[in-house]
Image (cartoon, rainbow, N blue to C red; front, side, top):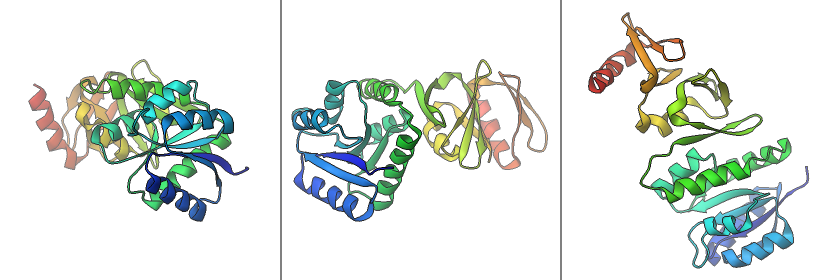
Length: 254
């Protein structure tokens, strides 16, 4: 594969220079073709240079990073957002399966983000429209919980309604999603990562390998750890160490 043609967009000169230096020194598969200090300038550079990847700062005077992307729709390049820590924004990124690195930039995070982009380009999966549409929706509706979760799969990006997720099952570094209606999806993140995202949404870890949506729990069967019966007809074991916590949650629901 040829080097990934890349544009850096950041209104802060220091931010552009640091990122450029890191990419040139450590990311040999990346070729920076230009830098822009504003969203307006970036739009014309994207149209002229046709980069495969854009590192995009969010908070810029004039056009923000999000507004710039909306002006460029459709988006036919990959984006890695570069942002200061913002709890809501980070959650929106995770639910929309969007790549990001935090300022100040950690080298390992940067390398991992670039590797993910390279993998997407090699597999030629084009999932940009869906994930950015969902991201913009999430960012505009900060008072409402995120109702969809983006799942990166082997074939691209799939969005599922959180309310329709029955349960999740660990498969080493991947996770199986069981959706109401019988659909089964393999997502390329660990169960722990999804647990952190879904813990506020009435999900509970009943076993080291199982996370369930309590809204889909139909019955608990007593035993050493016991087991639960879900709305899709499945029976899932509860570990001894998680039994007490589950019963407390069920009492609170009751």
